[in-house]
Image (tube, rainbow, N blue to C red; front, top):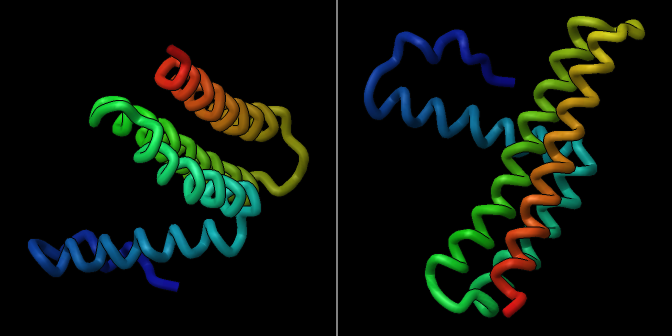
Length: 124
């Protein structure tokens, strides 16, 4: 596992290369450890090509694809929050439960947002 500690002093291209490596590690970790992320990647693999086919113009396609990417972004943040909460508070704790429930609700809202946006674009 790479460490972000050596990342702070680097500049320019070296910093960018390290940042890309950490991002790759995060995506791989989400793929390996988060079933919801894998399901949402499957959704994206279906929805993004459909957006190109069904969107009437560039704005439609951008909104449709952006809404799907937002689901993935929120899922990644939710997974990071859950990992951090589990590390900080492995025992049952009301604040930990609240944080995890709010993260889950954020994913639900991102899914709802995508559904509403797609309906608005596709429903004449």
